Structures are given as structure tokens and as C-alpha cells.
Length: 398
Image (cartoon, rainbow, N blue to C red; front, top):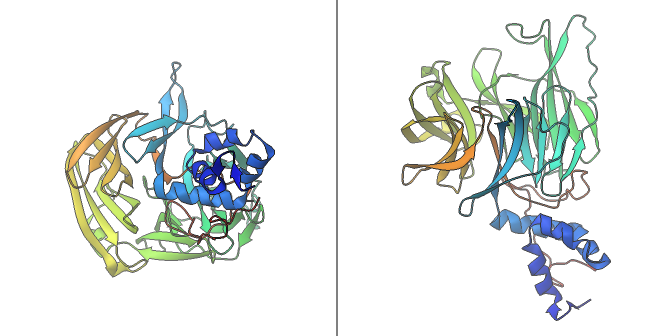
């Protein structure tokens, strides 16, 4: 088919690529040709690439209080081109009523959610497709008796080698739950959308993951956690999705001057890993931003900016628009701080304090089943970086 009505075929494709996912899902019902075209992996790749370049958003998870005083989770999209936000209607059994729901990561429009106990869910909010991952491949108890397993870390990201997303899970075995010190042992498993199954890795976990607000971050094929090594040093524990190996990244040497009442958050800013250091308490807070100029090298940490002191701000959430950072207010309101103008703007987004989590996000048609995950590795937001074919300009066959 050379055209659609009076429209040349290439112009028709240009129009389709600019439509949101919700509209494309409806267009698939028009006729078999439209269904086949929009379902084509090449079209899905082109649509993702277009959104990566033009429609990057922030996905925000928060808790709202019902009239009965119960907490309900809400996912919202915050548009980076101007300001607007829309609440997403996601129908997941894990989603609404789970008070400990964690937003683990994003890859090509797919997000990973978990309650850190039983369930891990992959979901494409735009297509409303979701999938609960199968049960762990690790036995409930190791060969050593009286040890209790506990999920200590989860991560989600993209493997450029297999061109599929992966979930990594670290299970720690304790002599008693919430016991002091380090776990007796830790084991690691990986779920790949390429195989649709879990496998245990024969690797040693070189540091012990600890909780730090807004720290777990995926960047360029690597997932990062706040951790403590065997010598009681603060480190960043990194897991490379491609070679499935761990790396320990030293914290800045000057961080030793801070005590443990100071919080550390890890974000991505201008294509670099950025560590944000700020007090855990106080009416006014200052936020010091350090950037790792050379990945994995301790001496490459450089202090580049101090924000504040700011009143009514609890913690950083995510950098957006390159020169702004979304932050959580002490009253449960989201604010945006402009780094150049040094001004705070209140946004009409509210939630239960300390229930916020954010990801840089892009809408896509990519399936959570893994069938369309064929894209190359990219930055923190996307992994679509293929060269476009000519022919019919797009290389999409009928």
C-alpha cells in the first residue's frame, strides 16, 4: 500500500508516530492493516524513539488517604514540556492497597513494582499490560538451619547484550529478623524477560545493602544501592545488567565528615551520577550536590552545587528539565526548584509525607512479555538508539 487515502504512506506514519499510546491502542481496532502496522516491532521502536526525544515525563508514585483513613497508591505522570500532570488508571492487585509498594525502576515504558515480600510486578501503564513474575528460584531456606530469608535488595534495568530487561534480587539470610550486624549469607538471582525465568548467580555480594531515601538508581545499564562493606565503609553497590557482576563504588572521601543523621540520595543529572547530601531533620535544609565525573572512581567526585537553605523541603526526588529538581515538601506537597533562578515553585501534587517515589519515564508500546524488547542501550530514561533504515524511510514492511 503506497498511501492511506490521500495521504502518502510516509506522512501517515509520521502522524501515527506522534500519537500517544492510548490513541494508538484505539487505532489498532480500525482495521487489520492498522493493527499489523502498530504491532510491528519496528514501529514500536520508532514510536519509542520519538517519545524519548520529545515526550519524556516523570512518573510519580505517592499515597493518598481515603475517607476511611486508609492509604491508597497513586501513579501520576508529570509532563516535562511545560507543567501538567495526569493520574494513571492502573488495575493491579498489588497496586492500590499495598502500603509498602516500591517503585523499582523503568525501562522502555515498563516499570517494576514490588512489596519486597512476595510479589514483583512488571507493568506498562500506557497499555495497562502487567505481569506478575514467577516465584523465586531460591529455596526458602539454605542448607544451614535456623536462618530466615529476607529480600534485602531489588533492581530493574536494561541489558544491552540480550536487548531485554532484567530484575535482580538479593536475598539475605539472618539468624533472626531485624537482627543486628550483617546477614549470615546472601544469594543473588536474576529474572530475564529474554527467558521468562529466574536463575541463581554464582557471585559474592561484596557489600550489604541498607535503606537510604531516594537512593536506588538505574543508570546506563547499572543498578545502584546504598550499602556498607565488610569494613563498615559507606559505598555504592552497583550491579551490571550485562555481565551480571557487582561493583563497589567508593563514596566521596569528604563524606566521612558527616554523621549518620545526614541523608544521602543518588540521582542522575546531565548524564552523570549525582550524590545529594542533606540533613535528615531541620526547619531549613541545604542540599550539597556531588557529581562523579569518571564512573566508579573515588577521586572523581566533585562538589558542584549547593541548594538552599530551603524551608519546607524534605528531600530530593528527581532532576528534570536539566535545570530543575523535583523535591518533596515537608507537608506532602511536590515542589520544583530551578537551579538557575534559585526559586521554588509549588506544584499542585499532594500525598502522604515520605510516600513519594519518582522515575524519569517515557510512554511506549513495548510489551511486558518481552517480545518487543529489541532496542539498544541508552541513558537512564530509554534504551532506543538504533540507526533508522531507508527504503520506505522507516523500513516498516507491510
